[in-house]
Image (cartoon, rainbow, N blue to C red; front, side, top):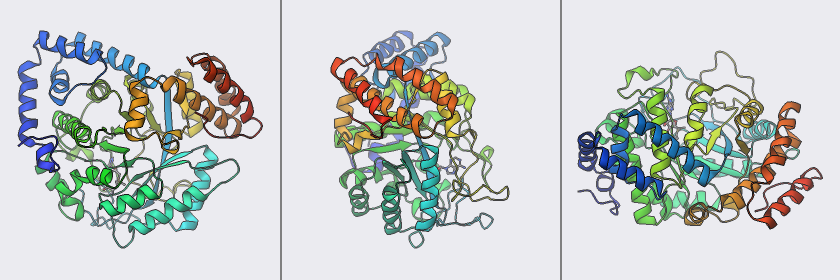
Length: 472
Ligand code: SAM
């Protein structure tokens, strides 16, 4: 039975409720009075529930879709401004005992080169990432209790936070590892991670069981209930995601919103982020073998609807997407993107060999971080390397409050300018630096609070003399 407060996966991601939602959406996709009502509700910027948002997803009226896009852009502007936070994934190990049919790490793939980084190799990777200018990483690993136990992950986090090369520092490590126990989540919390990220892959249990035929990840309930355990372990920034392309997107969309509603109902705080990955070709993997491939247009519509349905949740687009697609979805509510990414284990420090097949998927956006930063600014976005929130205690509901009270412009905006300046001084090419300094001059005036505006200007001058990091 559908119950968003229940701690059982089958209740809060209830299959019958999703089917009823899809039926309701089909029946009302041309019901203009209802659609208008839903859009008016969305304009209040308090979000939509899974049924309401599913009606908008089903609606094919071009004028309505244009209105949804416009609203998504306005909400993004209100809550996030024109900042885009940058990060990079760091693959620690691709040893894995699961059998995920879409992932080249699956245990039966004997073709892939298996690599587990030593702490020394992690140092080399992190120095290479710091030399690009990265401050925020998402660490990734396959699931292998012997090769990648929690102790290895914790030791790696410790190593990464401890490396300071020139002016470089990794100040926030988000963690994307397999579902685990409350005890292990407590350890991750104590290791001062940022967000715990775990993609659901698909919310459709029947498909999930087929797509994960072997290994611990086969346990749908354990996987789906992971975020509740993470929160019980004290982690209050969690990141959801569906691997679009595996199953029918309308089912997944209802599922991820129900998951967000569940977290809010039980823990008083929704997901910190929702990632939007699409399945990509990889060694031993052909995305066409799955049922749910979606066009770029549907992908954009999903992004826009996530933005209006959960206005306070960040949205992440990785380098799985091309420059063209990223350009299409950025204005629709994206708050974070990766840049200069390598998805192979050890790919940052070593020159990638053509025959290396240790990567998790093909990257579509292969530009350097400097190129991405430059491109963002030319599009009018402020590239932000800010990692302040969890370090200043603004996690979970405290971050949501900041967002809901629209204080981002007095807090995240100045921090974005400060960390951008830091990047420009330390790592940017001459053209990017010139462009960035001009942008900073222009963007200081946007800070509404006069005191903060003045302080930001002072701090910005200080960065050239060596003071680093966020201030607000
Ligand atoms: N092993 C952990 C787990 O099972 O959750 C960590 C996740 S894995 C390193 C990161 C994510 O990459 C997966 O959750 C999956 O959604 C995604 N992924 C796997 N194969 C992919 C592919 N062929 N194309 C795009 N993304 C893929």
